[in-house]
Amino acid sequence: MSQHKTLAADLGLKVFFCHLHSPWERGTCESQNGHIRHYLPKGTDLSAVFYQQLSAYQEMLNERPRKILGWKSPAQCFQDLISSLSSN
Image (cartoon, rainbow, N blue to C red; front, top):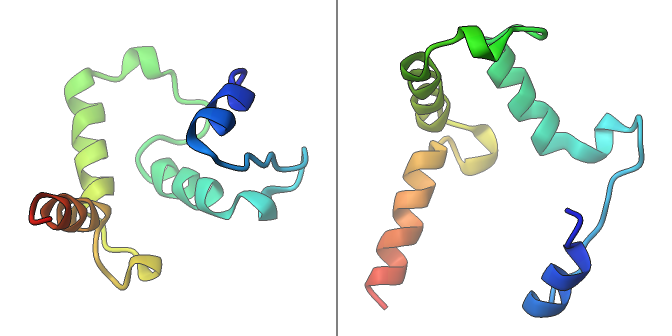
C-alpha cells in the first residue's frame, strides 16, 4: 500500500489503516486467515507445498459458503456480480 495516496486520489476513495496489534479492526482478514489455517498451519513452509495443492485449497476456500454472504460462496457472489455487469 505504498501508493495508497495515488490510489485514493485516482479512484476517489478514502483509505484507512488498522492499528497495530488490533486484530478486531481486521475482521475479514483475520477470518480468512483462520480458514486458511485449516489447510496450512501457521509456520508452514510454502515452498514445500505444490502449486496444485495450493490451487486446490484456493478452490475449496472460494467455494465455501459464508454467513456474511448470505450463505453463498465467494465464487457464487463473484459470478453473480459478473452476470449483473454483463447484463447491463
